[in-house]
Image (cartoon, rainbow, N blue to C red; front, side, top):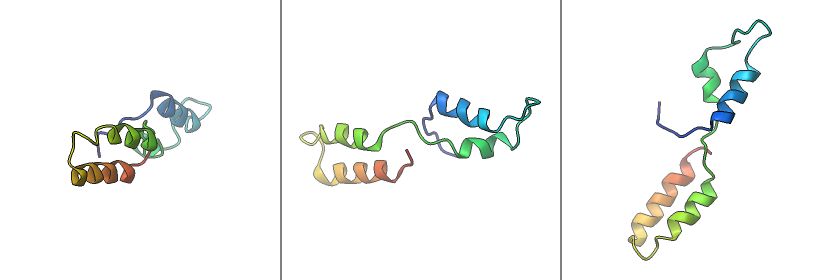
Length: 73
């Protein structure tokens, strides 16, 4: 399991979708949370990283951007 940032609203929505009328969950909470996407916009993060183009070596910048693009979100 990773330390991804997730949206509180997305978690609440996922739990609500899996809550039965009697208040119990229809699946294990870890399974439910697997459907919650990370809480960041990849393109926005990449754009922010590119703002540091003058401070970071090009090879490092490309590697960082590649890591961000591989993350779900």
